[in-house]
Length: 353
Picture 1 (spheres, rainbow, N blue to C red):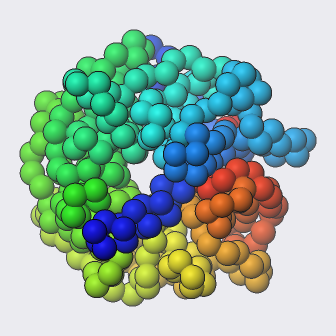
Picture 2 (cartoon, rainbow, N blue to C red):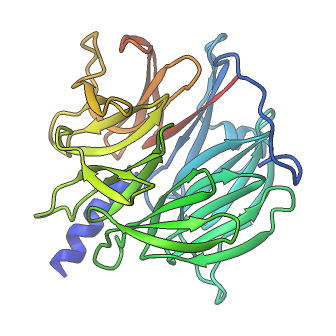
């Protein structure tokens, strides 16, 4: 019982932590940010997730943009968001749906129900896209393949316990199996996209979450540990050799994102100071211990998003109870602007060119 209580305390904090047709998408080269979409998870079971839209030029911010356009709430616990083609896909965990909206006007195009064969919630968590399909991990131990033209579920694959993060590299899907609801797992499933079958499992740290890759074929995974005697870790997987190496000089990792071969790693823990480290995936060295160079004070860093074009870094700040802030820094770590009280537990920022 004590373990379960500790886990759900951590889980509460962690929760608040495509194309137009059936052909592959050919994206136009973006010209830089014009607007932002900001997904705020809301409080777990609070049914108060929000999607905000910010116009960078006019400085207009609609904190409840989805409601403004669709005259209804987004739902409960928005865990992830992905722009793919002309659509935005939002993963709603407790509501157990994938909300699909039009990028230009924000109108809901479809709510895809994520249910098991017996009608229970799959608890979807993270999303990735490839060649006209989106792939969603869910806490019913599966990865779901969805066609972006028909919105039909093409296939479901059972992987490891409570799969969390997902990443596409080449013809493979890499899925981190957290085991978070059933005692913690420590594997990454390697899935052949063409056959949609698991080829192997790679052993990593306990309770793996975020997983992403660099341009040289390495896969990086953050593992949260067991919130007791096993500490979080940031590891590099040599995908070709299947070799796993812990990056020792990253202190107390709490999540990351990779952009242009740089890993922006949240470092810190609840009740302790947070900072954003930067790790060069090519040289395999830490570039800086603290990305912020202008002494801007930030509390609990909940998530980090990066614009691949401008290099702008968006740091989401939370206290898990009241609407949090999103701070935009330039690539040199200097604050450009802050959006205050955007939503409860602000998370993913998508840049719309």
